[in-house]
Image (cartoon, rainbow, N blue to C red; front, side, top):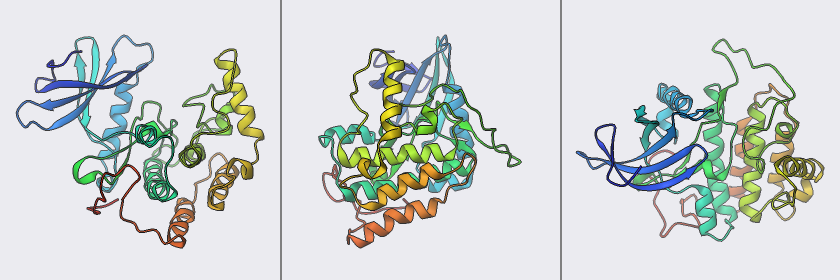
Length: 307
């Protein structure tokens, strides 16, 4: 890939946005409309290809009229360009991880609560479409651009899967599975090799909130001899640390959130309203103003459209 290259006949690459084990993401514009987009590439020779499956999930979300009220990017094109699977989608702003780094690893309680309500709404919608994300982390939430700069989007469904059939049959409980997702934010049950469900996405999100408020999690930067040993040490620390200690110095709502998620059974439908209200009520008690003036905002941005 190189700047100036044309893909899918009409999209010119103008700069790389990122790369990883999956492939590369580039910024591009439509040569006629000049509208900007994100282009995701994956080598078609990869043993474990994810892009086609991810594309299908985005299209599945957008086949539902209710998705319009959610902050989930839309796919414009999918195809094979040379030796690479290619997906063109809406261009979004920086990830919450990028913004967190920019803010020197600290978000204010107000910013976290404004994000938390939207992030819970996104996960509730994803689950309502019978999908679990399985890789909830700050990198997979981004802010929008232009008039959507106040909105938090959920992205990257490369590891997502259906947890329920169209006739309402939940996937079976299984043990002995490898860790899918990111160890830092994985639920305890995921570390234990248990099949993931809705509860695991929500527990992971709780660790994201704590990370944003404290700057790190107790199981970060642990010395280990190899990746297996590292995962083991993270699992042990996560399993044995008391929730009160994990959430020390934070409003009690965060401990309540973690405790609730950990008590959910495998196939339970979470009470999303209860979890959102924990934080919405705290927001009101602290007399915060819902102005979407985040820590990273260069100036207060007036609310436009739906959250």
